Length: 178
Image (cartoon, rainbow, N blue to C red; front, side, top):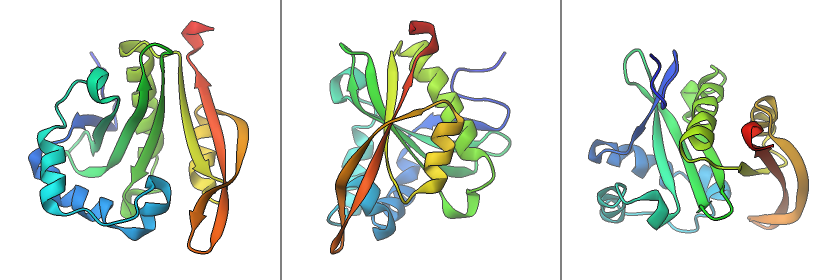
């Protein structure tokens, strides 16, 4: 029987203290700051504190970060986040990051499928949404491939250096709630 947080290719798992170096490299990679709204680097001490609190209940902290690993050997290939969790309106945002050397290998697609199943079947969410820069065609393609619909453009939503970027708002309504 297939576990809720896995398929034949990947598994999603909770953060472990051993993920400190992974978090440090991801959170301090300035290429990702645009999508994560980060303005300053994080110290290992701050990230250690975050890991110590990663077990807190999703209903309390309104977010969840899971590590994407390969099922065959537990190789870490990325992270997937649920954020702005709103249990009353049964909605949450989703973000995914696949490490560079694992991109274009269907791991993001597999992780997002598993995550959707978790969000809809286990958390009983009515909808997931994502905010993706118009210039991030790979992510836009992934989310649309998995049923997310473009529902709007947020003009000049992200400030990047001296320019602004538009962001696409995508939604996926739980088909069992329609």
